[in-house]
Image (cartoon, rainbow, N blue to C red; front, side):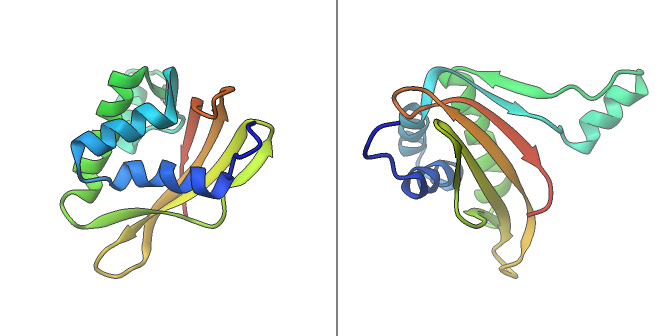
Length: 144
């Protein structure tokens, strides 16, 4: 890790990308935060996907995207679904934790803009490369 690595500041930028309304700024954040060949893995997919897989006797697969273009699409779609309608924002839930050198844990919550209450959340385990960019992101959706 670089001598100037600030895990809180870095995690704040990570959460910010999911809330960023400006497409150009959001794209710039993805390219700054993620390695060009990074992978984002949703470990426990949404219930509809799990149910569809179970209906044909398959275990629910993790979902993954790889590379800047796919990551930009993933972040954009999450923004469009949850933030753009004005119903939710994403926030860090507690302090980010440096678990090991170059491994960061970020807990987050999806907050209702109406009530201010957490209506969802999860944990992302981020492995960083030598430039402090995300190499892998394993996202676990669950309670805040």
